[in-house]
Image 1 (tube, one colour):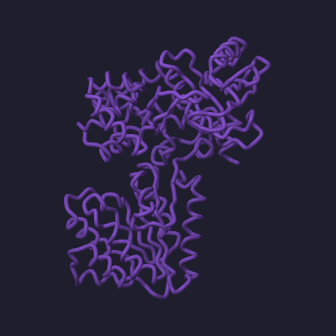
Image 2: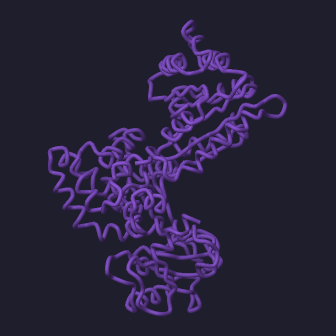
Length: 474
């Protein structure tokens, strides 16, 4: 299966950057820098590998790891540089630099001056973690050496917050680098890759999160049931191991943040319920750990959307795949490893409909945000949900002009994601009742229904799975 379905845009961006390097720059500075970020296992490294292979230019690809000291990182970097395709790679055989300043200066001497080259520093946050001065050193060498040579420097990282902050005002790389986000495969790309209908493409998104490594193991045309029957019973499948590796890379097994993430992943979403599920952590520790999770973009903190302020924050695991893994796979790894994946599969089957009904809501909201103007009432700027502490009312979809406190609510909506169960008059009556309890909504606020199985009642704007996918394609 082609692992680069849906990566045409990203490859085109990289090709464009290398083209600018080839054409040179103003003032004799053709060098360019790119900061690439994306969630773990989303395919960043594979994307860059494909790019340098297609470009057929001299390059160095160095992948950092969680080494205990900067000296260990430098030793691995020197070995990678010596084995690279750079014309001056042999320089690293004769010298053993002991600092990043010396190593990067030597690297500049190894670069060609008459043709483009590429330097890739993969998992750059690890290098900053072992040597906080690395960021400033790299900026200095880039300004003095790399920028004067036809080289494209690509810095890759999975720590979204850290990578985004590298280009902030006051940081060494401010305004020196282009930023690039590598997203997971979206539902439309997943459907194309797996040859699935629209509704089943969204189901596949909930299970795989759009991670290419997992999608590569999903046979084209196979149903969700068929795929899970194979993947869940194989302890070495990408579906099984990706979640564990992602968490291990972010959090030690006994860390408080990891403990809270597992509590949120199993459905504990309010501050109080998370605290209870985590064994009654002190409030200060809970606040601190939740801050870590939200800053790392692993957990999203959301507020009810209406014209009235609210403090009823809810927390949800941001990545659909990790949400699925934490709910069904992570707690039962021992069971699967001893050959009883059939028990896990039965548990998924029995809980799938109710779990999916909740899990699909943030995915639908994101899809609705992508619809072209004119398809939703009032063309809202933001789309969220509304709830109270008692969940009475609880509204799946709210369109408004801003968040978290809106000036105007343009529509209210419901998500019905059941097979053979269309949105009917009973569902509309419930939605209209809840609309009457939503601050900022009135009888003129239009109702919207996103339904997997169609609509059997008038007076509501319907959105089908096919229409949701169209937003991604457009």
